[in-house]
Image (cartoon, rainbow, N blue to C red):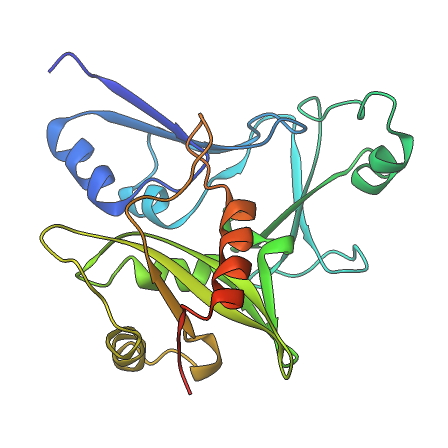
Length: 246
């Protein structure tokens, strides 16, 4: 193979890909950023493989990163909060959108990404989800990213996405859209619940609806279009075709 260097952004490098690249002698570089805050967290070429598989990097030269709570107070290492960055990577604002700009940028130049993450003692961050993707079930917060990561460990599941669905009693419940690996054609909710139980996952995090589809809707850049899945589950609810846990 002529491939010598692999740069990945937009998601953590899958463990299988990271291991195969290492075995083939392909150098890895992982970066994290956004349109408003261009790639500003990096996992270096010389970092151990575990950094590529379990983190999304640390602040690039000239950039500061912090993790904050809902009041935008800095959190200590290990606590989940919103990722914020400051430096030459940060944009100047949204064109002709002063209110939107004021929500994203503060007076000190910090950009608040809306991404949830944790930072370790060494300054490496791990993106855990989006603030807007948090499912609030009866007052308990569920990270859709965390549930998706567990689903992807199931031997039948190739791809997965978790979205919130409305519930009169609890406010929201989680619905998992899954794409199965060949030659599998079906997956019951009971199978998923049993798998989560074996993984010793807290019960409130269990998916409560399962929808098997051929592929997840994605943008041209590969990001899952969750808004389409939210619309789909609303349609399915009205038609009462979703399998539900009692």
